[in-house]
Image (cartoon, rainbow, N blue to C red; front, side):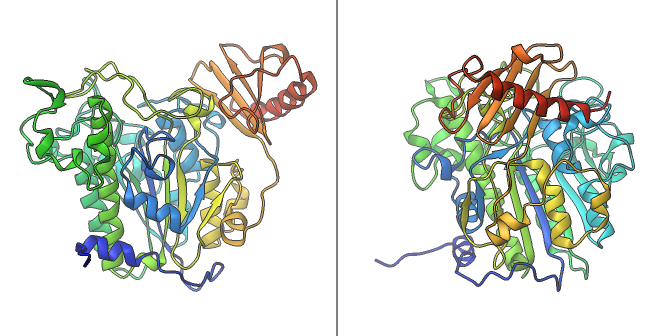
Length: 478
């Protein structure tokens, strides 16, 4: 049988030929591409759920790089972005970044991933969702980016690119100036991808850093394919199908996985994920075509766990959806400090520098800042009071991290608290600083779904983790 490949498939297949690892070679700084998916749960990616989810491009990158089986983020969009961008837990700042917000999250002058890499000679870009201060006085270019494009706020309509009605509704911008007409009519995933491709095609003696922060697969879910004038809606002749579903590419993956899903709302979500994966494939293909792939470090993560349910009507063409993510073997979802809200898919890929491996060491998105600082040899990062650790020894040299605290709080009136150390984790829900007797205790090695509270059986372990929690809490802004 003779196999036929598209141009993109042929290029992508060539990316993963075995090559010698040359980690540590600092002859040239790599390009850095940080890709963040929005609301993609642990089970919403193919390599964690191959029977149901079609993400061949993400799966290939993960298989050829270092994939993290215990990768943590914060329980919601803005807090995770703050943690990623500053290398610090959001509670360290005296602002509102502990929950999703359009308000200021940190002061101008705070060391960020962009200012750090800019100091090392990088051209710096963000394409997609910012959501760390949605007015023009707190936008990306005040925090180290040469150019910015996308939404200043959070989620937006997939085809008209507006945020929720109100002050921040007109959110679509270039370099913090709102774009007249919002570039209506093109899916936001494709607009953000085109911007990434534009940046990659630029020729410069300096490497680039790009945060590629997709809106998908966050609600509103709207996958129209070629029927751009018709919002996603149920087929009036068959309510279990979407209008034009048979003719829309994103509902009909080559492996037939999406069409095997009987739940129409799950099919719509899987279509959004397939569209996102295809877009990331286009970005990687452009890197290859421009001769830049071998010198580009790619990092991928979701920003929090699955949404699961959505009431609708918050954004243009926003559908009400119920139980639309893929199931996960964890407790909780988005907004939770249980594993389901904070334990997400993630990997690092750098051809020729990272050997294929699956890493089981617990890591956190706060680690990405010090890791990149190490990769580019940035010395000042030692003075930044970062919470994260440099993962270079783990990723490049197969060393082990010593157990350390991983710490969560959520909401600006903090009502969810957690700390992990080794295999043990304490959790409290409810306002008020946690006391020793208020914690639940879980052993994640024996009970990854957090079903059995062991606090009464292991009071000394609760005390040990509580004392560690107090050390972390003391570092937060008062």
